[in-house]
Image 1 (spheres, one colour):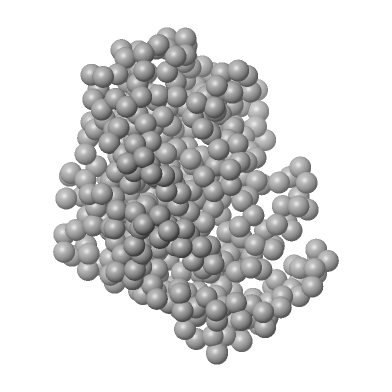
Image 2: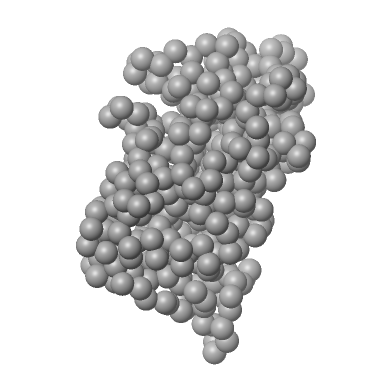
Length: 429
């Protein structure tokens, strides 16, 4: 049996939660390998809705759920999320939740810095969630981070605090803020340490054992490829690598462990926050798609920007992330439209591009070239076989496959787990 890596192949919010939950019910372990609690996965199981930010989606079904070293962890947000999910009847123990002991922590000072920067940026805002994810990654690569394993050695933390505070105190002074209150920070860490350490372990070792037993591992990505810090619409990106290759480094398993790479793709396009969006619709059609698709962020509640399907971007994402097949979600949101459109290229200063240029100014000026197709009046909602889909919806799906140069492995027709049309099983070699 193969492992499966699930990534978003657009700007995130593609419906990964439902697909990951559907796959997690057949996996032996689910691993989050990057991002922080800015990710949002909504699961709907038997009519009950679960909203997750940090916890891997497998936790709801009792599957071993692992937070890998590539994640930046807000321990207080984790505690609150665990309490919320437990209140919904989910049991969370050190048997079904494991946290990498080398995982960097998001601290209150990171949230402070995130907010100060965004407020000062004015029109140059990146559109972060303000949760401290970016500053925490900066401290990780700057070798200043406090990690999960440090919570067991707080009595010897002073040298690390010296490095951390020397950096942050200078930044805070620039914003007219007082220095970090070290005593208060240490007290907060002492208070949260027992909760986090309960789940802490070298997860690479546990996953190695799972893999040797021939079990199936599901790697769960957050955000989307177009928000990757290297390959996304820079600087309007997240602070981690969101491509499938990060599953290896962010979990402690090798690159041959990622298996089938499943790219989650909406049947149209959305993004949250600032940045270029060539196919954005600011008309009645965009309004309709946003309302029908309930396009509000799981974590922030922010309204998502909406546009037509962009085959150029998805083809680029699939190539960069080595996608084996895609899961097409929210096809039902397009039901009832007289016409649907797909972006097949861009026009930029008289030249046609079949990819998105790297420079932000060029990205902002790209004009989409559309191919129109007839829509369908019949409903696709809840369809569980290809034969249940309207003929024009099938043609739309087939055209997407051709343009993105990647096959559709499955189609999701509602938020419910079982409303899924399977063309190729990712867990079968």
